[in-house]
Image (cartoon, rainbow, N blue to C red):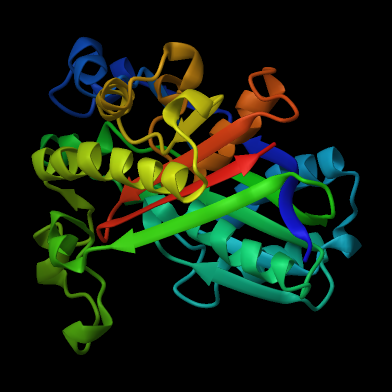
Length: 331
């Protein structure tokens, strides 16, 4: 049975940098206030007309080059996003056309912040069963166009940014690659972090002028509840992965968590007893790019020499749904 491993990574951030001081011109906030609560100094925003599939193109090109593969070598596309280019079709199909992939399958998954790891789990199974040899996995988001840049939307607007990360999941006979993946959900908390409208269950039309006036089209978050659950579920699912492979936290060379909030990452690090060298964080530069945070961080960590052959990597995420997941791999 072939082993699935990451043969190439890539990432892309739009060039427009939005600092905390920039946001203070839209809402009652300061650089100090944002950094104290989130660890974020700046984030990236797209220009008008740019969607997640556009951000995915340079990230994919980097990943293909790193893997030594061509567009024609990819046999399946998995696109994780909570902000697709269109309501329909999925962004995977949009990317397939824009990059000239063969007439291969293109699967969109919407698991928000956990999307990349859920996608990794799907790719893992296809590789292990011999169905495919090379799969493109994307995490890409355009959150900026969904933000309420007023005092009312401050709690979420300061957090999110745009970006894309890509990974090629390939088959190998070597003793390396993904060891296991673990996924969970708890839908009873869905309204603690959700976007209410437009909604297909709302009848006709799917969104009304009244709903727009009430701001139903903007992401809403109960920050305290999200924080409380995140700092519990992150360690749980990381330990689940370690125990499934008879490993301990001492075996972790690098933990790459979903970049949700620096305070969450620091609390998780403390609870697991990990050193600074064992945890990667880049939220200060890019904010929370939802499904894109882990592949962006993975590619950046590799480029910086933080990941070496034979290293044990753990990926972990928590987000809307609630959903949470982990993956453990030997690089």
